[in-house]
Image: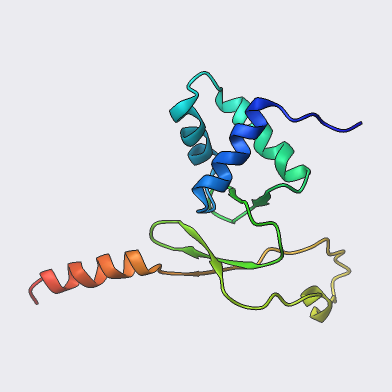
Length: 137
């Protein structure tokens, strides 16, 4: 049985697409309630999960931080800033079947992988460079 689209689901999907910044559920909730304050946090979370299950958005599980959501569902990689926590798309070709290169000596049954690069984004780097110039040795 196909799930029907609801107004709330449409609002959540539009928010993820509008934000285009790999938002967290809290950021999506803030965007939705800016114009529609009656929508509950639970409704936003439930619809994010349903949209991800339907393949309309991607749910990115990133170790050590809240899940992020991506409006772009094609295979690609991400980078996370270690200072501000923002997530960015990485401009590189996707490597299909990367997991087939793993020598599985532990009998582990792989079901997929998430590859997230880490570093410092341009905005944080700029802030860091500016603050170091202001300090006297």
